[in-house]
Length: 445
Image 1 (cartoon, rainbow, N blue to C red):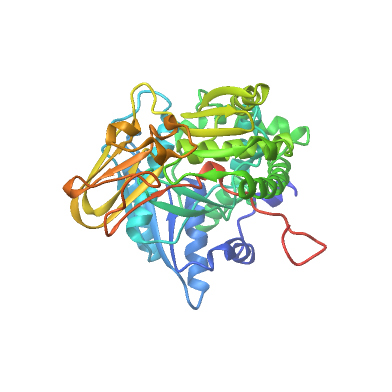
Image 2: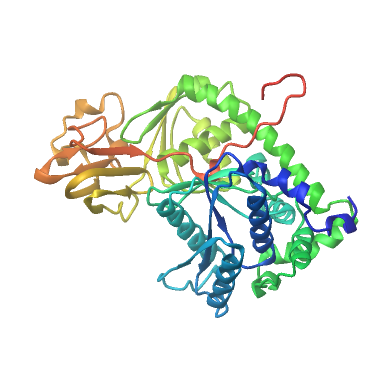
């Protein structure tokens, strides 16, 4: 595609094709910062909605993170545009202290948390983001520079899942991944709409900015944004195939204890290709440790290799202890030097313990979730642990309810009536890549 073609605004036919992914949803939220990308998304979705006979409810969310003095005015500008377009807009703010370092990462994490929480409050079914072709290419290069494997290089999925760390989650949709930034800028210009520019996007202190400045030279060598994004899409298809292998092995050899630990059979692991083995370990680490992101590939590889080298071995990564004894590996949450923070709340309500367990109470009462520690601390018989190492339950959740009732899933007591304590899984970093279409059949492979 020629550069002049990419700079054309998104036409109505193209927009209908891009936004077809939104049609199954009845309540949607749009994340709009006021920059050219999200402003174009807002314009395209508003026009698409106006063309539909049964349009979904659309709620626009814009974040005033307070990290730049212009942020408040930009949020108000977004709200004014929404009013002209006939869409509701909510400005999200935070009282969190301003970060002293890693400002872009801190702003991204703050924005994500505010957006997910607002989506839960509005009961929307999906959050629509304005990530585009150039974002995909830059993300691919960033992860390539970090030595990422096939899952990291698969970059951003068109559909994923975000958590806010407090039990709320929302489906995220990225319908513009095939559209260049130049086309989105042209879309705003064709509509006569102004947009804000974040000066940090031109600051060479950030790696993404430096890579963006290299893009014209890379394009001259054939590595333009479309080529890089297509490569990421091919890797995502390969990653999906690997996930199928991992699913089969997880179903046959993984044992999940309700209190959090996981056990794997070494014999089944030995049949996996290395890339699938690494993916399986990454998924177990996410479930057991509750981290939002996978560890760097080089660290994951070292972790796996240490456990493979000896029949009796122990290693720690991402807040998870893994102990191999012969033909079995047990994984459990490491309490760490400072321990795990307890959670207190008054029902009815919900809370999240250690990013791993959601507790929901439908009735009134004071509830507290603490790490179990040793079994004897709470009068639990060692036999309750069965053939699991007793240390595997040090970070398990113990629910303390009214009347000193104590409950640990699969170990002690029973959940009080109207109270649930369940694990949180499916971190956004481990979202399942989309399967490629099989041209020889109607079903996906």
